Image 1 (cartoon, rainbow, N blue to C red):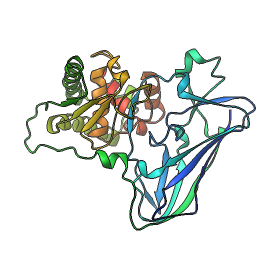
Image 2 (cartoon, one colour):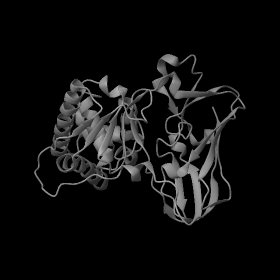
Image 3 (tube, rainbow, N blue to C red):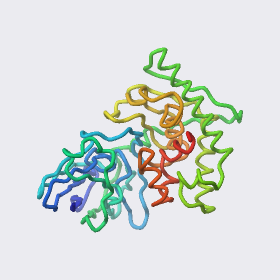
Image 4 (cartoon, one colour):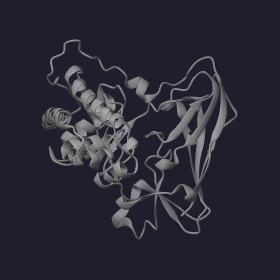
Length: 333
């Protein structure tokens, strides 16, 4: 399979312009290819799939961070030979662009996953593959900003507001809940408590051992320190911040479990969350660890699921220590 990725933009954006660009995928193979919409702008900006620079400064992703289940057929988009599909995206919804300057945008090729002949492989869609770089051609875009004010705040900026208690108690802070039945409120409060216990236990037991290597890859001092930092932030955040869990978030997709943003004191729960077990592997308690690794630890989402996370640790430890699901599975096993 082979694909061409292209980004298109005007040369200049001025004060009243929306900073919108076009993401396009063209199938240059001689057979149909189905690509996973997750981690691409084909689903909008719901992941850190773009590499953006203002001069030499990297502009961080400040958009929604989603925990998902296994993909299904609807998670993929089939592209026929020679066909192109495109999506307009508003960069300022997820990237805090400066008022002026030269901007370079590229798609992160490591985020693209695909499967041949989806119709035949519908029962094994979770076994999608990362495309090799030599199977891809990519064209980025460059544009200039010349504005006097900003029109849009990023999702992350809107969600900032975690109020940290000055009183250090070394004890779990009770959460608030919204739009839940009595039973759902009870379950999320239990998950909140169980997730805190998982984070505490993970922090206490963290060591350079086979379990660490399985989820975070080959040990070195800097990566180990980062994993310890994230678990420490999860624990201290749960002790210092009064978090609010909100049911049926407006950005929930059909395979989503929960979502949040860096530094937020709000976590939205989706339909998939209520189908998880209370504890165990891939559980409600583990989801709490995952989501708080984002809110307090500022991790990202690079892979989902046990098999993919184990492989990520082998292939790219730097991404494994920045991956929400990796912290969840470490804490659960």
